[in-house]
Length: 193
Image 1: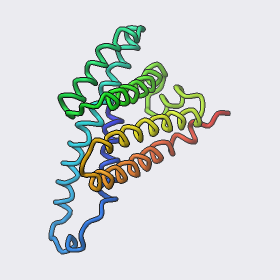
Image 2: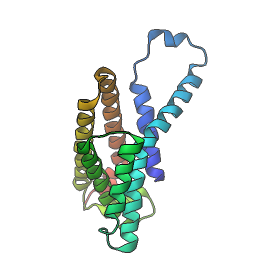
Image 3: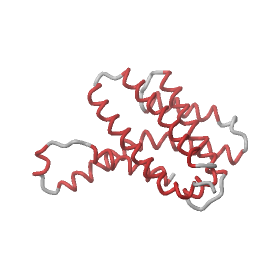
């Protein structure tokens, strides 16, 4: 979870960096303080959604590894996702529920692999969980595909498309950049001899 929190912080930092600001912002004294507060606000908002779902997936994966029977936990995980969709995000679309469930299940499989692997660091776990860099990159590609479908489905239900499009473009660019940076140090370690 610590690794995922760091990832979210990196994404929010990159999103702030990709945000266009008006020209008059350069005249604001102590702009760094305003930026710091805005970044903290964005982190809380983004982690409230993104990190919460990852926490659901990690909890389910942990219980899968502990019990050895992943089927028992499915109904509880689905109930938590449904609760999140209806009560937290107030999204009524059944399609988004199915996509969120697929996203959480993909992450759950990833976390289950990591929890079953041996290693003291995140990169050691990744190296032991995935047989090659290609397999690890394929996981990211599947994740990105589901995320794109979620964003497209949300775009169909929203009214303020211009603002949401701008946000989604920054988010996608920042997530891709953060994932690329995350996988770079592991490239040497994932090379199969």
